[in-house]
Length: 341
Length: 268
Image (cartoon, rainbow over all chains, first blue to last red; front, side):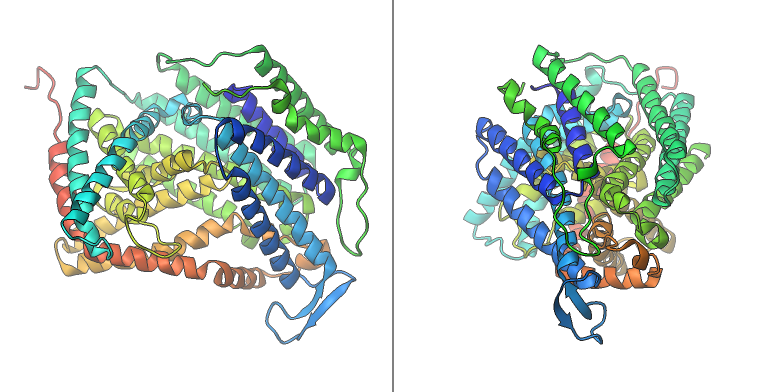
């Protein structure tokens, strides 16, 4: 599985699962599956320390979130310690329930973090740059130039630094940094001039078509406002039949705007991505699971997914189907090699 | 003039929307009850902020429609991102980041649109290179963009008060750098905050006032981020005091070299 779209669908599935459950066992199982998949891809990409970096972040997150919640919220029936009441904010009883609740929050944020890290690992920088919409062509061009120039600029900075070190500049204070920054800036800006000349002479041209740009801008703003309003309504627990259509309209408007704005530009594609059978198969499975989970969640048919440690601690319910749904995330391992293009 | 007005309105709208989503836990305290919403909070805020960033990028890219500006911006961003990765280039404690120095100066010198693009794209490229693409990235993009954008206001002030090439110019820039050192941390913590402060019990936290929420946030901020932000602010001030003047001179020289326009055949 290597197509960008399949991986984005995989990410959406992972986020959907993380955001629909608050059951600590499911969340732990999900994080374990994600770590397993991550290690598998990291091995292929010869990326050392991937696991240790992620585990370090996960542990920090768990400690911070449980401490913050335990110190700030004082509800729950099992009291661990009593802090003096006159201590501002933290005074009161520290309960086991609020500690557990904080841990669940930590697990959720950890699962989101690891899922995005897998995307960073699985997709190449080129694939990620391709995600910039076509309507933002000057931006995409700028990013590409930056990525192309970066290695040579780093090398030049290293050379200047070594030259300064030979001359006895210790590079310890901020002031010592000036002899590095200025030559780097001047020589690179000279490069920029010759680059822009060669771009012009090779016929690179971007035009803005005033009216269309303004229309695109207005419809984007409208779409964002609709999505924002839907979100605010959902914060106030308005029913789904008002909110979901608003999300659909907003999302649709964004999609239509970007597609029509990109269509106006004629571009050539270099190394276009192709769909393999594995990509199509996995994308289909991911879409089905995403839609299924959302529908079942809306209908309240995933009882073991809900869990709250308040008011008193209880053991969360578990079902085999829950674990099966989560293990769909391991599908990229099943379809095999992830040789990036 | 018409386009300028539109651009201005767009930016005000995005500022309002972006801040409203980030500050939602304070603005709508009564809405913090529902448990399901707490989980989706960072993702939804991230999504809305992405849309906001797209709007400003779309508006601001009209400033870089010619090859000269694209090349200039691309190379400058590469320098800024490169500095970030140059190992041991600048000694500094945790939290210190040399990127803001150039973002402030570019915004100050080239105006709000280029400032925003420079700030946001620096973060985007660093994110792409370090594998830092995630729900926190939109927040970084928009905040760093705002740093560059607001620096343009400072440029306007110094032009109006005729402070160019005076000591007060550097003092103003340094104060600005210190302010953003703290503000950046404050804003970046916001998307994360409602998650940690998630209301534990639907009944009681709804009665929490905006003030109480703010008190909690302050306590959390002081405990976890103040030291980082302090080093960042001090770093910004030091870099601006020692390096700003020579860099501004270089930018000035290249600005003149870059600001020529091609004449059409009949105009010539």
